[in-house]
Image 1 (spheres, rainbow, N blue to C red):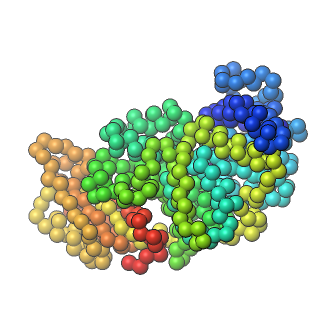
Image 2: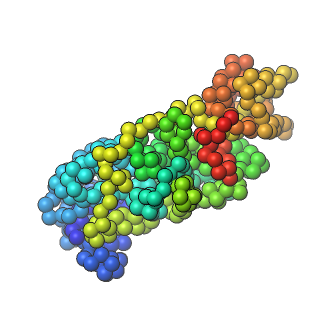
Image 3: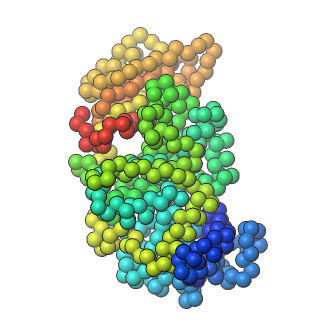
Amino acid sequence: MKVGLAGLGTVGASVVRLLARRSDELAAACGRSIEVVAVSARDRQKDRGVDLSAVRWYDDPVALARDADIDVFVELMGGEGDPADAAVRAALSGGRAVVTANKALLARHGTELARLAEANSVSLSFEAAVAGGIPVVKTMREALLANRVDRVYGILNGTCNYILTRMEAEGLGFEECLAEAQRLGYAEADPTFDIDGFDAAHKLAILTSLAFGTEVDGEAVYVEGIRSIETADLDAADELGFRIKLLGVAIRAGDGIECRVHPTMVPKSSAIARIDGVLNAVAIDGDALGEIILVGPGAGGDATASAVIADLADIARGDTVPPMGRAAHRLEPYSRARMRRHAGGYYIRLSVADRPGAFAAIATRMAEKGISLESIVQRRRKAGENSRASGGDATVQPVFLVTHDTTEEAVREALAAIAADSVIATEPQVIRIERLDDTTPSAQREV
Ligand SMILES: NC(=O)C1=CN([C@@H]2O[C@H](COP(=O)(O)OP(=O)(O)OC[C@H]3O[C@@H](n4cnc5c(N)ncnc54)[C@H](O)[C@@H]3O)[C@@H](O)[C@H]2O)C=CC1
Ligand SMILES: N[C@@H](CC=O)C(=O)O
Ligand code: NA
């Protein structure tokens, strides 16, 4: 099987090396060899640890995708627009199978591309696009067909999990951890996609389509990233019995599908709390099977190449499955649940004015919105301490609240009233709590 590969960066170079290393075993398993015969990359001189002297080089990846001599086009350049989009469309339109790791592209154009693949009777495979090396796409579109899925959630970004883990365990700074994640090849070319939550949102949009049979809608995901997480929050989470993870959650709710990515407090006793470093985890609730959790490396060259090559092996063997697990023209329109109706617990950190009555005013505003508090912790700062958590102002004190289950709407309204009362000095920090040991998905809980 002849492969044309565009993008020889972290993942692309690993794919070429791993294909060379496993060529005999792959040929034996697939009944034919898998060979990279043509590539498109920006730098022809760069040493990628593998001999590419015999392959055809293209400056234009779209021209490579149109090469009549290739059977499969592998897109590993990244980016939701051109040239990745144009190249993938050119390959599919020309009747060539496509393998891509590009979740940004799929979150934006996944439905159209799946329909284009279907119209041309070719496969569009993207195992590497969701949770890196973990075989979650294959699991969802092949192994769980007997199940109605009601919830899928997990840690979907290796860079963020790596940063949060090292900040918490070693007390390192955010920037230092991000730089290390970039050095290790985990981060996106533009790492704001990682730390602002968009990369996890792209993956969740794809998972949502696979789980619920809906069109892919990257815009429908509510997104918050991890930039605002401070040591004060990691420490408070520890004291309260939680850990903070960037979680992606998609669940059936009363008014549609609730799809959200945000920092989340999860109980220390939950399986998700123990997923550290670059590992990802995806939990899937199926009605017949119950909950399964898949864990493994979510980023990195070789781990991601493993998923790309698994897709290539399926194509070489002639195993074809519709991209989204069902005929693309049967995907249902996505119906988005309103985030304001989200129900669950909340951790709230406030920098409260150090004056009589401030505390009572906060409790009153919470009560007015029907929010009951599970705990309130007020930290008296020691003399000379200048905490970021309290805005660095000597006249304010950090206060940590944990609510019982309530709604997003109630919390937002209570915090707006507290701000209007001028009893807080900085923007409140709000982190949603996911009590994962409770088997009822949170959006379905009565509050
Ligand atoms: N790095 C990782 O751990 C993972 C990455 N991915 C996805 O895999 C894809 C590739 O990611 P990385 O290898 O990490 O990125 P990278 O930035 O290391 O590599 C991308 C390569 O594509 C090349 N490229 C960009 N535009 C090009 C063009 N017009 N013509 C030819 N070459 C071009 C770049 O020069 C670069 O070498 C992205 O879609 C990313 O989201 C998916 C899972 C994990
Ligand atoms: N930047 C991504 C790479 C894999 O998808 C991540 O950190 O998870
Ligand atoms: Na995967």
